Each structure stands twice: as structure tokens, then as C-alpha cells.
Image (cartoon, rainbow, N blue to C red; front, top):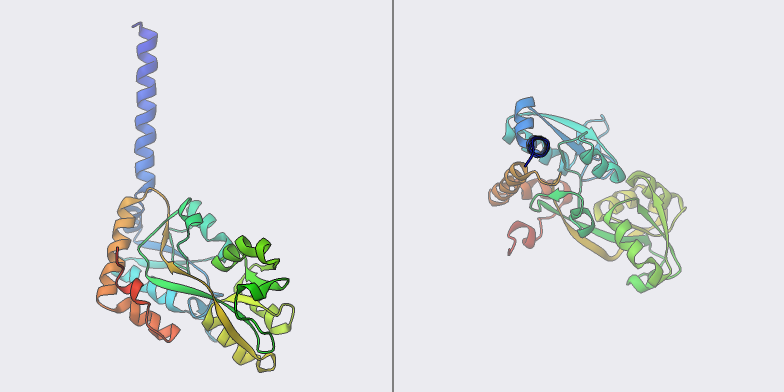
Length: 269
């Protein structure tokens, strides 16, 4: 083998080693969090009771309290990065946030591009509409206009079925806009979480809004970047610990008015 070949092999090996070391360093988010003494958590505040701002504009909600618990256990400062549903993954992938803790349903589509912790909660999406509309199943959505929040599980699941049922999917960029459209009559049917629909119904009694049926349900996890084993291991153990001591269930009950489903508290696998 001549000198030129040896130099080329050495250069290639050095390049691969450099790339490998850089990749490993890039993925050690847990170490970076501890070094910075801060965890940047992406959280959406237009989705009560998961995330919202109270009448004094204080950040609140079950996800907010869970984020505070996570930062406390890590012994670091909590830095909230405000997001909307559609930009949760982009903010994570572009490293504007370390994790996403924001009603993030674990779906096959999302698992292709990011990882999740073990489920810490469960998100139910229901069909909501005025009492005068007789809706009992998905088949009753045929030919109807249905409002969804863009990039949520409700949007994804309805889009899959829209052609079969002849549904017109009306997308809004955030939860508040979706629910404003329902309250004002811009749309008469939405896919939404029960607590959000209940709150909007209470503020708009003339609309006589009510839940019709469960449309879909997904476990909710903490989103993190792919190939980040130390952080994933920590988050999985963190969820397991606080499922066992009841802290995550207590947070969920405080804001959602019910306990976590048994399959989330004590998973079979």
C-alpha cells in the first residue's frame, strides 16, 4: 500500500472518529442540562388544563407543574420555552428546547423523528358540538365541517379518516382559536379535550355545547431528540418513580379532576 493510500485511510478514520465524538457529545443532553444548571422545557399555554396562564398571567397547568417537579428533581433552574402545537417538534430538533413537556401524545408518526419517555399521562380527544346536533359515532361526521388544532392527534387521526367519512377538516393554529371558532359558530363540531370543551361550554351557555363521543386516546410522554440514551433513561426512571409515589397522579387529578388511567399508572409491559 502506497503512502497516499495510507494517508487517505488515516484521514478517513480521523474524520469518522471526529464525527462519532461530536455526535456522542451532541446527544448528551442530560450532561448539558446539569452543566448549564438549567433545563429548557417546551410548553404550550393555550391548552388548559395542561398548560395555561391564569388571570394574573402566571403559568399554570398540569404540564407546568410536572415541569417544575422535573427541574426540582434535577436540581436545576426551569426555563420555559413557549410553543404551539405545530412547532413542538421543530423547536426540539433545532435545539431551542431540551425536552417537550406539552400534552405530547406518543404516536407512530412522531416516533419516526423523535423519542419519548415512558407515558406520564393520557390524552383523550372527544367530539364536541351543540346539543342539537345528533352525533353518536364517527359515521355521523359524514359531510360535516370539523374544527381541529393543527398538528395535534385530533388533526392527525381525523385527517386519516376524512376521505372515508367525507369530512371537511378545518385547521386552526392553536387551541384558543379552535375553541373561539366553536363558540362563535364558525364551526359547529370540534375534536378537543374534555376539560377544554367543558370550560368553553360554561362561558358560552347559549351554544349548549356538550361532549358527544370519544374520538381517540393516546398516552402522553416527554419528547426528546433521537439517540439521547442518558436523558431517556433518566426520564423513564423519573416517570416510574413518580408513578410509584403518586406525585404524577396527584398533579393530573388536581387539574383534570380524575385519576390517571390504570394502564398508565401500572403499564403491563
